[in-house]
Image (cartoon, rainbow, N blue to C red; front, side):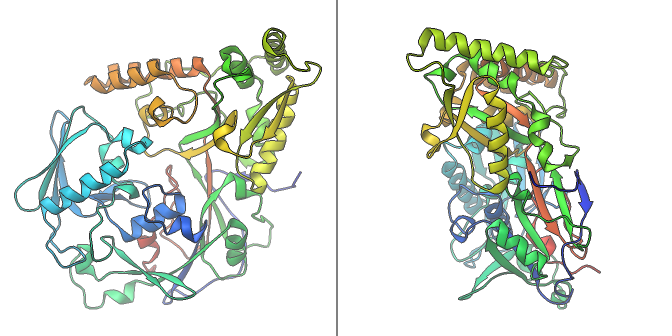
Length: 493
């Protein structure tokens, strides 16, 4: 086990290296990942790719450092009283190819983005959009089949950027040279801001370094980067937290999914009672103890507890029950299933496979999870391919703070594993409810049915971390672990 100091959510100051570049020069930012994944033109984006896409391509709205929705290509908007119409007024300006930014061209780009998301969970979230209309001048209207209070936050996702020929629609331009990448802010008028002849004195270039976690951390430690973005639990154990460091480790207190999704529809895990046995046998707090994260809260709920409007109808499972007793019950269920259906050697533990990453933190999680499941007669083995695994580790940050996001992650249309069509139907029914209290109760019923199906075994919230020097003032931890790069390009005064 790796001995580590306790890490406190949401943040604790650590010192990692000497100061980097000065305020009047470029700022170096390392994004964890590979160039082919981060610089992709696809709409399937990882965390680092989302940061680059949001910097270079804009949607109607975007997210600020606090995780709040703010104007982007749309300068303002109104929502009708029934919540079924969102009317946006585009800012004045041109697209990158010089053509005017019109309602018709924005509508076409928005429809293209929506079409590209078909078959994804974000596409499901956006299904209430029934029609996109180009109105007079620079005004477009989104008509919804059902009210969706979090539509603005969905539209702020980097995948919803309005892309046009001729270049980037976002506030920054990606400049590529043989051995380097940089992001540079556009002039104010091109960003929808008042003209300022001296605007360049207040901004700086961002030099991008795209590298695996170990290399990104080394850049920070050596003073070659002022920030590292995109860290997960799998990489956290690589961060040295010694007392002589001078950087800052920032942990985002996120919402989202962190647990095991069941993929197997035959064999041992085809049995609901056995799947429940797995869920009851896991000591979630002990699973996370080696990472020494103070403030991380385990949960047995598939929906993050404490969301806005939570009616309080769903409680934690097995709260206060004896773990040894729970494991004895789980072992008995597995033994009973094997007695009836297993024609193999029942003197040996039953084997189940899991798909997960291979970073040091995931290796640690795998070892501890395997140790826990061995107490109920199971042998956990890593799968070579997620498509054939019995279990898949899910580590996904929520897009918006509502039960529908969580429940949509298990929609049968996504084909991610075992699912419940009745849960999908309840989510659709909830969308039809105009009364917020009735909607919340229907979604709680959907959560209860998903919980009883045991197709997902929750651990708690996903962990996201960044390394940020104290001179980088625009960085702010937030529940979505999204940290806009344009703000990092502003020189602190």
